[in-house]
Each structure stands twice: as structure tokens, then as C-alpha cells.
Length: 278
Length: 294
Image (cartoon, rainbow over all chains, first blue to last red; front, side):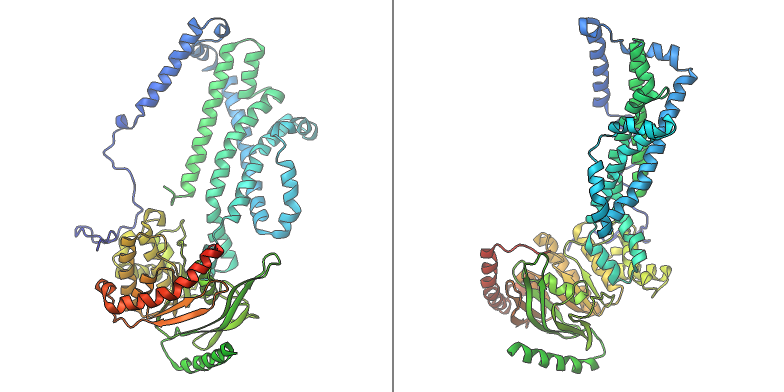
């Protein structure tokens, strides 16, 4: 009989209590680099360079990577205004995103667990959900006293409905066996909510957050281009208005990096929330 | 008419068995279940009467959708009965006017597995006694480790999350999670359904070993006849929907059960009888295009 559970090694009599870690320590950092990926990025830069030099008419106005880097070094690296754009955009994303989660998660839970609440509120959610966040810009500017608040509001709208729908769906997919089992083993309703329903929802919340953070950056950049005088979106827009293509590309790369950093943060938070997922 | 008399007979026997000290005697009297989700009345179970003696190992077999899971859920107190009564050791645990009340004295192991994925094996197993405040967290963990060790060295994976284990090991952990509550009845709902034959055989040995140690009443549903004959003392064959009891077959094989018994004359004869009985129902269910209810 094959028995994988039995610990046959006599040198290890104590039960192993820590979760097993997957990767062995023998990997060095050199072997971990994705060389194919690195070659692909280099190829992309090369193609960009070649197109600008020999691509003719359409590519004439586009700077090469070297030009962009030079412009970045000369004009932005030590420019306080540029770094303030980063901070301002991150603040807007932070406020909008956090507010959307704080309001969206409880709303999703209520919609999933309360029948009458669902019947009353869900139609309104379904009515507002298809409206793109940017369609809220004019009304938002009219309604909120400051531009800052209206931009944060629009940034909030983007991920809000995503998290609501995901959590709502998550509540419906909670396994009834888990609820039954908790009850039969003596858990009370309050405990079941905190220790069975909430953990069951974490995967849905994680999906909602991953999808949400990407949308948040989309929305904040567009809102900044329309309504703000500071931020990474505004920087890019100013580059366009002043016919400075290097600025446009510095802005685009900055936005890409900012979005990537935010996704990393969300992924990290998810790993912390779900240690049981490998 | 015949059913009613059988029910009263069973009820009187139930009161007799109250004297039995070990506990875990189940008396199911004329139980029926109708579902009425959207006005279309569906009769899932009809007039089921079964008596399960304390410490007995009973297998319920029948075609897909015959109400095996429904019956088990009603015994467990997850689902209300529409008619009839269920007694455990003479105490009424289910009746039409009684709200379903699950308890740690009859724990279910579900067919798809229901370990809490966010808890480690140790936390899953020690969950029941801690919740019921029978033991402190520390005591419960110690008992859990002991029990896991007894059940084939599962203590080696105590710190793992369920997703890191094979499905066979998950199911064994689940049985341990049920056993730690010292239930009177263990309800197993097709626990080895999704397993390949080799793991299944291993699981059978583990289950028989656990049964030998603890001697709880076990009610087991399956549609695998070999499994039913090999494990149980009594096989209850159910008809297709509405589920009723068709045959009760006593298994005369000796315990401990050994794999070589699978080729004995006695075993084959039992299998022939059971197969004949189930086959007719299975064909009816198949022709109606019956679907799994679970």
C-alpha cells in the first residue's frame, strides 16, 4: 500500500507544522531571469529605433528611445513638478480605489445575502453600471465643489461596479456544504459570517481588485487629461499640446510603470490575504 | 397501508433500542420529501423506512438522482422532511413541523469534499471541538494531532493547506475532522466518487481500519456496488425517483474484510443479487434522463 502521508524519515520525528514551500534554494538569480523575455524587449527597442530611422513619413515625428531618455534626464529626473505628477496621480488612484473597495465590498455582500435589499437595489446598480466612468465627468465637475473631488469621484466609479459585481457573484458561489458543516459543528450565525462567508469571498474580492486597479489607472489618466492641471495624464496631454513628443512618451512610460507598480501592490496584498492559494 | 404498519413497528423498535448504551441507532419512519421550487411539485423520496442499528455499517445504493443525498441531508439536519419522522436513539430529530437542526452527533463527509480551504489541516480538524467549546484550542490541537497520527500518519501534513494534498488524503482528513467530534453517526455521501480504482481501494482499507477502531454507525451512499458490498453490513437498494426502499440485502462476509474476498463465491452471489436489483432502476433512470440532484 502506498502511503504518501507517512513520514518515513527517522531523522524527522516531529510533525512538520509549517506549510511546505515550493521552490528549492538552489536557483540563482541568473537562472531566474527570463532571457527570452529580455531578448524580446531588446528586439522591440531595436524595431522602434529602425522604424524611426528608416520607416519614413509617418514615423518622422516620433523620438527614439535614446532621445526620450535624454529628455528624461535633462528635463524630468530632477524636476519637482514631474515627481509631483506621480504623487498626485497615485493619490487619486489610492483614494478612488480604496473608497470603491470600502463601499463596494459591503454593498456586494448585502446584495448577495439580503433578498429584499437585492430586489430593491440591484436594478439601480444594473442601470448605472453600463455608464462608462468618463461619461460621469461633466456631471461630476458640476456636482463636486473642487476639481480634485470630481476626479477622485470618477476614479472611484471605475472599480466600484467591478468589485460590487464580483463580490455579489462570490456570495452566490459560497459552497452550502461549508455553511452546513460549520453549523453542524457548532458555529453561530455571527461566527459563520466572519469566519466562513468572509474567507469564502476573498478570492472574489481579489479578482475584483485585480480587474479594478487596471480600470482605475485608465480612468484617472483620462480624467486628468480632461479636467486637471497636474498629474501623469496631464503631463502627457501637455506634451501633445506643446508638440513635444519626448514628453508624451515620458508620460506614457511613467503611466505604464505606475500601473505596473499598483498591480504588484495588489498582487502582493492578495498573496498575504490568501496564504492557502499557491 | 403496509408502509404505515412497518413504520409503527419500527417506531416501537426504536423505543426498545433506547436502552442501547453506545448510541447511534437511526430509525427512519416513512420519510418522504417533495420539492416545490416553482409550483411544479417534485417528489424526491416517498415512504422510506430504514432501521440502522448502533454501530452498523449501512450502504445506500441506487441510480443517480434517486434521493440518496437528500435522505442523508435529512438525517444530518440540513434539509427538512416533508413527511414521516427520523429518530436517533429514540429521540425525534426530524419531522415535518421540526426545523432542521444539524449537530455534531451526526457529521457528514460530502461527495465533493468540504474542507475549509483557508484553514490548515490541523485547523480544519480541531475546528469542531473548539467551536463547541468542548476543548480549548490547545487541547483540540493535541487531540487532532493524535487522531491524525492514528489514521495512517496524517499528522505529517497537519500544517498543509487542503489544496496541497491529494484528493484521497483530503477525504481522509475530512473523515478525521468528523471523527474528532465523537459523532454517534458518520454520514458519508459518495466520498470516493471522483477517485480512480487504485486510490479507491486504498481508501477502502483506510475507512475499514477507522471503522474497526471507532465502531461508529456509518451510513454511506454510493452507486458502486463493489464498494457497497465490500464495506457494509447491510445494503439498501433504492428505486429511481421518487426514491423508495426496494431491497435490503444483508452482507454475510466476515470482518475484517480482505481484498481476496472480492473473488469469493459468496461475494459474487451478493453482487449478482444487488446488480439485478439496481440494474432495473438504473435503466429506468437512464431512460428518463435523470440528472444528479447534487
